[in-house]
Image (cartoon, rainbow, N blue to C red; front, side, top):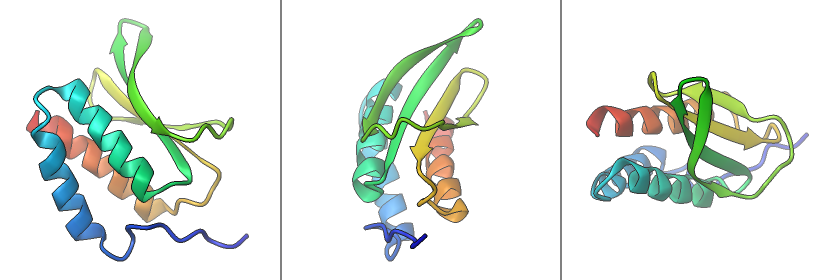
Length: 111
């Protein structure tokens, strides 16, 4: 299978820093998540990303962006209450996935 080329791979560090700076100014965590999901899905158009908040055993959807894939998502824990899900049909390499999750965690640390 041919690897899909994403819009932001060539400028990943600069794009990552400017995106984090942009979403930090959103005002609250939910709005920051919304902006981050939109930025990530526009940079990596082949994925769907969404955020949830745990409340007991339940997880509540917060926000997300991207095209529905109808495949099993990967779940990444951001902290004890928040998770991010990424749905991708194997076009996203491991390094790109790690960068996306790291961006989400940086947002959590700074909030």
